Structure formats: structure tokens, C-alpha cells
Length: 96
Image (cartoon, rainbow, N blue to C red):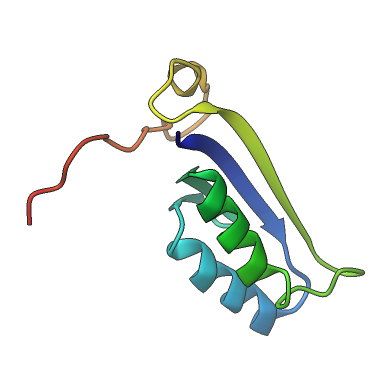
């Protein structure tokens, strides 16, 4: 079962920041500069953490993962935004 996470990071060095950004692009959708929305299985969450862990400096950087419920659940519809509206990513199959 996929769960929805809000992943945010504060990385103090530009080189590590770019690396974390590139890793996160593979796991979620960017919703703000250092904030991603990610639908992850438990295995994918661990894979993401294993990729980020060696990149960050644990005394200087921080990555937060906030679970907000099952992917496609009702909680995402309750997210409020000031300024540009929050637009949940569509679910379902993508035809290429």
C-alpha cells in the first residue's frame, strides 16, 4: 500500500542540495523549492532514505518526511494554500 509523504529538506551546501534534489525527483513531485510530494511503498521509502543518507551531513543538514495518509486519500484534499493553490497530482495510469 502506498502512503503519501511530504518530504522537505534543508541542506546547507549547494552541491549536496543538488544531489538531494536529483534523488528526490526520482521519488516524488516537487511542490515547492525544497518540498516534495511522494507516494511511496515501504520499500520505496527505505530506498529513498538509503540514497539520501550518504549524501547529507548529519550535523548540518535535515530531511523531514511527514506521512499524511494513504495515497489518493481524503487528507490530501484538505491541504490549504495561501497564494498559488495546491494541486494534487492526478492518479491513475499514464498512457504513453
